[in-house]
Image (cartoon, rainbow over the protein chains, first blue to last red):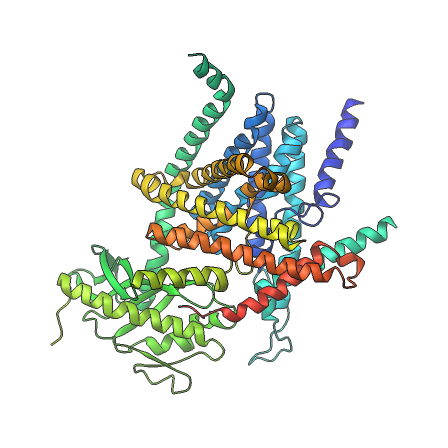
Length: 211
Length: 206
Length: 196
């Protein structure tokens, strides 16, 4: 009985992070990295995986500490925890994936102020047990990563004709081909407009399914 | 004493956590710092080696301070390209940076042993517009610098790119990025040569 | 004289050419949230300018005079965010004491400036651009704040007029604001390459 309730709660928490409470598309959190790293799928995926790592570590750490937190110092504790794990992620990327680290530049340390992580620590991890915090972190992280990858796929495909650096559309050039890349998609313009249209699309779907 | 006790009781978790996290960071840093340093060095040297193929090792010289004009200065780490076993100098390589169209551009510049001709440049990092400014990484642009004189270069819109001289033909649709590269090279080549002559690493003109 | 030229060009470059919002995607969350009315936008911009100048200067000093000297660069991010949190706390206390009406009107937004990517982002960019002198750091931080204020006021002006337009239901709110920001960033691209 208790096990069943646990499973439904787990799956509900997990799915929430993917769609109903998708951090980028619904909660409108974490916009800055979404716009900055989605010029191509590779950096978007790297950013998404880094965010999953930091989210999981910080949610677990906060959940373990939750009974010891003093109310007025808790934001400071969250910030300290998140900053530590982001530094570790940054060091890892610098050591093992230097080109990605170069490309993502200052946006990895900017995960510290990514509202997604602090919000989850505040609303979920500080109030729930270890398992639920973990599931919530994985769900939110996956939702974030998937959104980033979808956005990046659109921008990279229309902007260069490739996805994950593999050619998909034949680019017009000396070997023939018909696709003239929309370079604007890789520039800030493309980022803002694609995200805006994507949000509009999500709103449309929500309206249709509700009403 | 009461105040100190109150302070400690309220913030003991913060202090303990700070200590624990600090330790975690120190351990991680110590474990991976060598790799990070090796990555940084490899990035420079692989580019420089492509420009100076006869070089077998790069020897780091003392950092020199250069005046780039317009009030800017930089500390440059020049590397001598040497060939074993007698350590003959086959060229010099150093990093140069400046602002491009979108963001900073960082280049590796290589010159011959006498600092008379350029061996070429390679892009260390840039954020130029893909498909336009990004073409500074292409052979069309880079080949024009291989063998060019180590003097002031001028950027021209039309010309003969296969003719190697002090005129560089700009990339169509990427004038600002092309201009940025030429400007960086002009600023650094003269300044680094003067500084190296001061240090006695190369001879003054004949 | 040359220093002044470098400073002025640096200031102009960060306000117009490398505007933090339109080219570096920093500060988008408050940008979307607060740009509804021009007076609120301007107030937010001023608060951010003050905090970012203070934070940029303090973090530059700590980075150059403490962390690099002691070889503790690995603590950079932790130190930076703690300094920023502290600076925001100071500003909050100052505003609450001397401008209580302003404090009321800001509400939750003042403590939220801590999570504004623009502030930590600028501190990190100062580090990335290898800013050598303190005066350069101060001028660039102030310029970043001014650029943000300018961007948010332009957006507020557009949004006030947009309220009279017939925006499709699914695009109201954040989507149309983002699309507008995209068009603005396209316009600002025209400044690129202006300053070497």
